[in-house]
Image 1 (tube, helix red, strand yellow):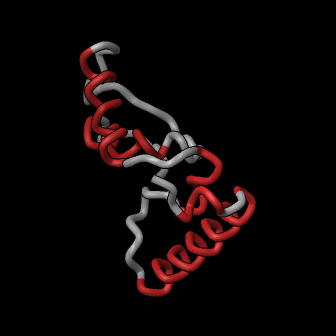
Image 2 (cartoon, one colour):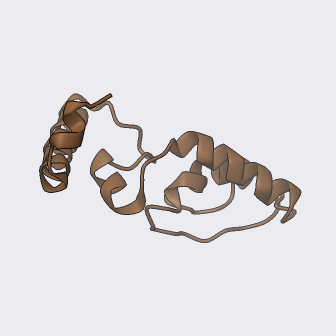
Length: 101
C-alpha cells in the first residue's frame, strides 16, 4: 500500500516535525502543562523519542537490582537531557540527592 508519507521528502518531514514540536512546546509552556523533569518535545530530535517515565522506571529497577542502589546512597547533580529519563525514579530512591532539582 502506497501512502502519502512515502512521497514527502525527508527534509520536509523534519521541518514539519520541528514546527509541530515547537508549537506544542510553546503551548505547554504557556498553559503550564509540562512536567518539570520531562524535557521539551524538541529535544527528541536530538536524543531520540521515547517514554521518559517508562524508561526511568526501567533504569530505576536496573540500578536497584544490579547496582545495589539504596536510599542511604548519594548522587550529585547532573544536567544532561538523557539523565532526566532516570532522575525522577532515582530521586524516589535517593531523597538526599541533588539530581536535577
